[in-house]
Image (cartoon, rainbow, N blue to C red; front, side):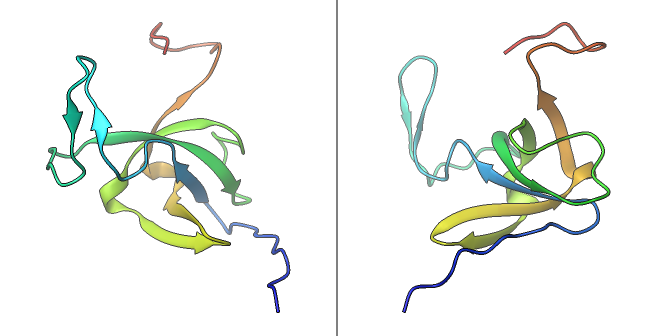
Length: 106
């Protein structure tokens, strides 16, 4: 018997994010392969928002956000791993245009 699709509503100020970079190996800008076992001091990663609680004010579903992966809780939903965190644990939101910001673009 297959599980029915679930609709998940995040509570309060919680945000559900899927890590865009994954936990595997990655490449440096010079093309050097960095294995997943290599330790990097407190590295921030980008992810995509898949769910927000009622009290979340800054981000919405589909936004690209910057956060510290090591400090979050993981949850698996229908074979996909997501991270759950409070909105205040997000460090940045990537947007095409901002009304006020640093002037930095990705």
